[in-house]
Image 1 (cartoon, rainbow, N blue to C red):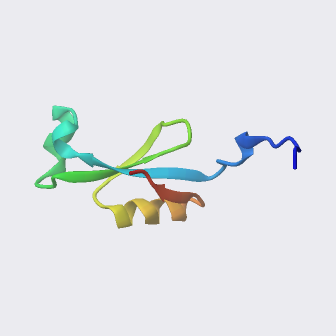
Image 2: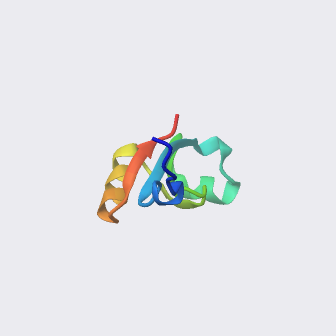
Length: 74
């Protein structure tokens, strides 16, 4: 029960999906969004944003197409 485990391997392939309000984005990005009020960001385990997409379904599809496991951030 007290065996050491290397937790850095645990997050391999996991990406985090969270909603982003368009109002919180820089003006340059807001001008490209159109009439959407919310987007979804995909982040790696280090917090680096990998993608910004129109909806949650697309974010999950994008992750899976790239052999990653998406999870929702609340």
